[in-house]
Length: 527
Image (cartoon, rainbow, N blue to C red):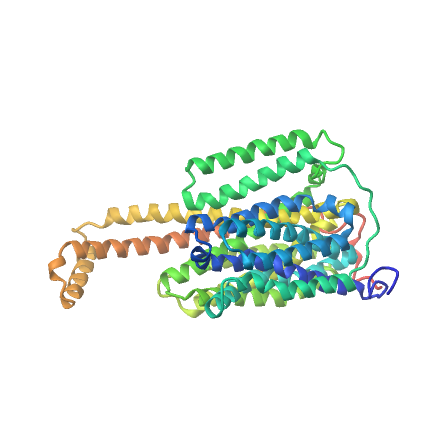
């Protein structure tokens, strides 16, 4: 075995082996963001719990994931990247096995937290491994291939989860991680190069606890706000704890020598802008994954599996274009990269806007065309958005950039689902009140609708229910139309969030590492 500690440690193609290792490994935690949701209804009876309590299977994972991610850069200095990635892969895989065996809800939540410890370390470590294996000018190409995992895994999750539950058992949504986890562990052990030792610095306990608490309660507030309402006391308490904890973190961050998150990286406007763009991308991606299946299941009567399949066209198009755009991004100037980013966000906003015209009788092409545009937009922006955070910081901050990127994607997804869900509820209620105010007996359209409903009920032998049944049917029709209009307005808001990225891109100064003259580079630098 080579001295480097890897079977391919001295190979000129090592970087591609490293990318393969990460793609296989990170498929699992990304898949877990959606596959478990499908199994929640089936867990209620098996774990002897109720619908409200079982949601903590998701919430506990999100909280622990966000907190553990913060410690990944520091933990790396203790174990090294390879050893820590092996440990985190083992923890994730073994805890998945324990989740599948959980006898009750408390055990399930505990093992899910343990699973999040593994996944929360794997995600930023994976970004770091890819970044350090590739040269700056090749990172966009590498992340273009890796982006296939980020896009496809959440899409496959509901489809695979639905299939396993329908044909086998809900516990198999955890057991399916085991063979892939074993493969990931073996690939990491044999092919990932041992990294050099780093200087161990004191751990920022105050920053870790305060910022971790802030992130955890932020995510809980966003999750529970959709269920209990945004004016619920518990949700306000979550906001309060999150805000106070964040201010405590800010107070301590500038008073310790080695903070858990070095805020000086945000002095670079271009790095800060990329973080904002990552949040906006996550809002659009996870917002669509939340809104579109819900719409077609509610109004178009799609089964859950078919609703999940609707996500595939966009994911496949994105998977095709991401490697291509990643390669192109590595050989063009900053002006070309800006043009790609602008085009991608314009298409992203356009796709969301096209979804705003869905109706109760939606044709195949009304869904397919926006999906293809959406996939093309992700294919254009994902490679650059994934590689730029690490390219724009100093080498010593690569691990930190990976941590921040992972957190921004998770927070952006939670914010997107929460904000768009809130807009959907409020707009639907507001539109219903407006429509209802126009439903008066004197208008011709209402008289015509009432007469039509009366005729239908008469044919069915329901004359004794007049006029209450007619009024109820009419109210139901108004509610349905108001809900559809609410979805349409929410998709327009989703388009506006995507459009917010356009001025941010225009204000960016650079898309390449400092000192790299990208305007004169005509191809990837040779080995």
